[in-house]
Image 1 (cartoon, rainbow, N blue to C red):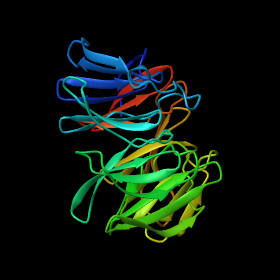
Image 2: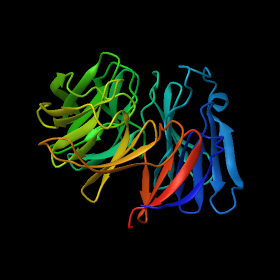
Image 3: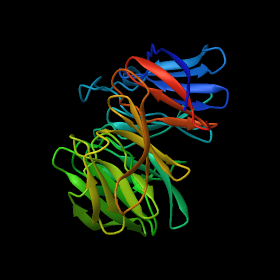
Image 4: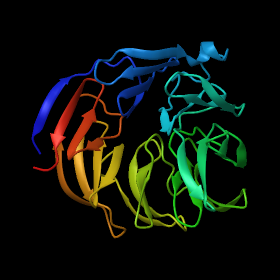
Length: 297
């Protein structure tokens, strides 16, 4: 897995998404940009706190949600609202909710044959109609909510939070959320657990103990102190993990035990960003540098 490129990253923005010829990026202080991907030229930009007259910071980390592209809509969480903008000209399409947002990025799910937007606020898991922003249902979710909801079979959604919360599974039926279980088996901190073949793989609480937990029951399958706290994705039957200290680890997603297949130190500095895989190349970023690794080698 040779390193193809190494360089210093100078990032003015915290979260970004590429969509065709444009990049949408959000900074911690609320600056939202649409840029041409080829040139970096600004198409439009504004400060979301100023535009909607919201108190600038509800927590010291600032805006921590990634922009989400949905057709012609660009969806964002900030302050006390969820927003959908026209991605071509920044016009507001809808605005929903009036409660503190946390750090979670929304996701989509098809529930009872209807596509929904799942928003995890500081105190609730809420289902929305993504076209209108209309609220469909909600379920209480206390804790410092950092990770994205995980959608599994049978219209069930897994959510988790550290700082004494734990995890829960809820089932959605007829726009009603019913709790299936709640326990402390997998209290993820700031890395979303990965669902693979009916099991969740993730880093438990702030120390980052690695666990496998059955999605449907919340039953713990195994616990490991390795590889250390980090972020990961699953691709081609492998867990691709980047630890907080820049070590790349490959491991098998199996409920039997934690099983590493390869590891290497690939980046200096501290890593808080999940690895990105595109075209067979893995991109890893720390607070000091960025690397591109050819995973086909």
